[in-house]
Length: 532
Image (cartoon, rainbow, N blue to C red; front, side, top):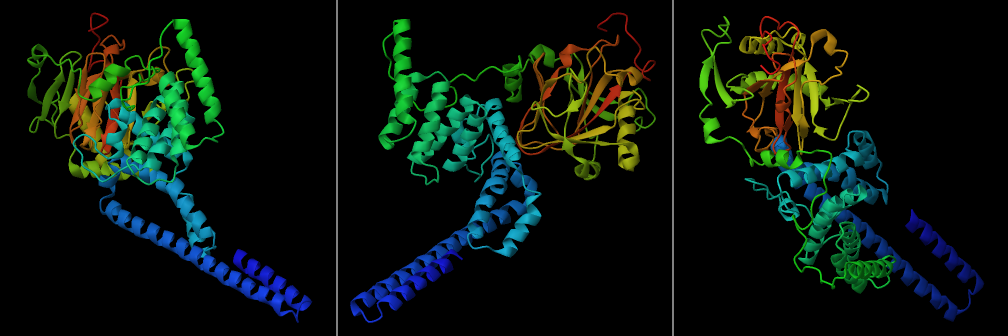
């Protein structure tokens, strides 16, 4: 349309010229040059159209190859956190860029298709959440940004890589959240890949601008000055660089004077994991929890290991288990945690997942101040609740739990199914409620025990850990773990504070049954002391 308007304007100009100097050959030669300009304008228009078409073709070829790989094994593809993040980024950002490209010459079919599907696209919040999930994995499993950008995760070889622009966007996500610790790591990685010759849309000046300020926020003035000087050398007219450089230099000189120290040049070592200390957060046992997630800091001594046994378990002579008892393994001696083998068949697992998938919603926690259920950043998963009436398989699972534990499930909560995807976790928490109790606990009592079914293997990460006594329990498909949350007195056992570690690679499916106190009076009688 713009081109047609331009041609109309030029033709009108030509007609005016022709009307005014019809007999002037010298002036008519101007028409030749005008025509030449029209031809050049036409060629520019064709070139622009071809360039746009080439860009669209390139997009189509790249995405065609990508979707062939991703749809051949959707769960396997999304099991890698980098692939999950890049899917969020593509649908939220890059497809919008393609839409803008096509809109330069409107295409009703494409726009109509985009409009139909856009309602299902992830939004900015989803992309931000996926980026934060990568940072959570980076912290928990002590992975540097370079390993992530190359898709090099423990025990996993993949072509899932992060480009310069991906790393820069990761840094900006952290920067916009005033998380300068992670911002530095990702801006530094973007700079490294750019210096190594990788092409990118983002400029080196932009990366240095964000990186230098983030480093300043981390308190490293010498390095902030060095980075800002590099920025000024690249772009002497940068609107902030000169002012920032003067401010950083004055601030450093003031600090050196007050501390009576000499200037020390910044380290020539590149910024990497461990260069700066991660700021403390709300979780006092953060370091212990994350170490256990990595399989470090386990307190399973030889003496304790010698007290762990395996046995056949018939649920106190349950008629359903007498002929086919359950295999039981001790996972921990005190508090006693056991694992039951072959609890769910593959068919039962698939049926439970099939029932749960349409109902999955972001898992919630009860706000301790208001009592209202709400989402929280420390619990990142999706869950659904299933009851016996939904399908006979749920009835069978509930009955099986009752037979194995010897506890009634009449007062238990519904079977909760949870799926932890990229970076999915549930930070250290208690399953039991602490006083003052919620109103619903006055009827069925507190959560006496937890029966946790593992419905998938997890390639990396996803352990259930107990920071208080240093235990890590790893998912094994078809098995279940069981422990008591309360002493026989009804008092909470605070040692059972536990966490679901972030899933590094894979998809973690679990289902759990929270068994309540009411109805257990003769099945688990009170003890003689508070901690029996």
